[in-house]
Length: 72
View 1 (tube, rainbow, N blue to C red):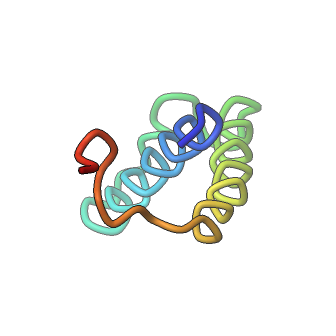
View 2 (view 1 turned 30 degrees about the vertical axis):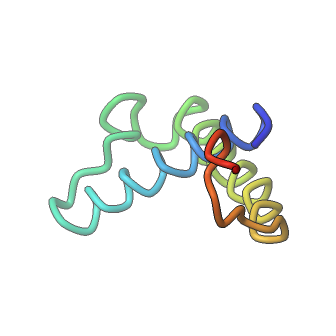
């Protein structure tokens, strides 16, 4: 997995955790940190969305059955 996908997945995970907090605790960490409708809040949401689109490429890649380093 290349660096772009790792960065994209990191942002997607952060976004998923934020939505989980919204759903479970009714707390939006992004708006708590940066304020509602601020430039930084919109930037974070845009980055998470772009990274989600980048991560779609992972669905198109085959997954290895055996983790790297354990090939015989």
